Length: 144
Image (cartoon, rainbow, N blue to C red; front, side, top):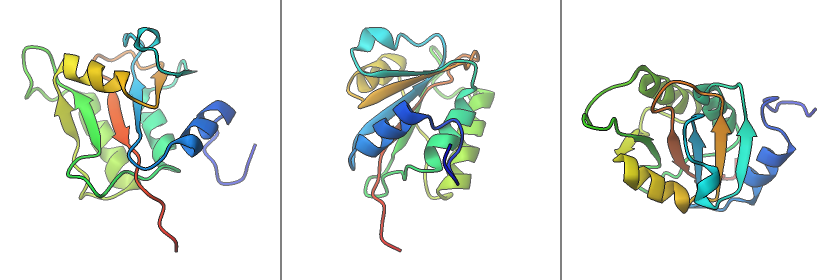
């Protein structure tokens, strides 16, 4: 245990976040997501809701502010404008840890899968709600 770190950030996840560089992407996904088939490193946080994992990750990882979007959710199949309740929870975590200037973008389901296939790693959560998936682009840590 370390001071000041969210206890969800275990050794494997912390090492992954530390190894990522500016512009690398991380997928945080629900229990239905086909993570193992992507061929990316998979970190499991079974039993933990996706918004909770997102908050823990954003407590130590900055989002990229050099690009128009640095966080994306999966669009609802057949209704890309639909707002699932979990999307507002994702937005809340982003605003709380970063700022309101960060927008939650959206990607069509198969575009999301393809982008996740290129991610640095995939964190599988215990999220059971549909569309509990988010991609994050890592930013830079600026000196104080």
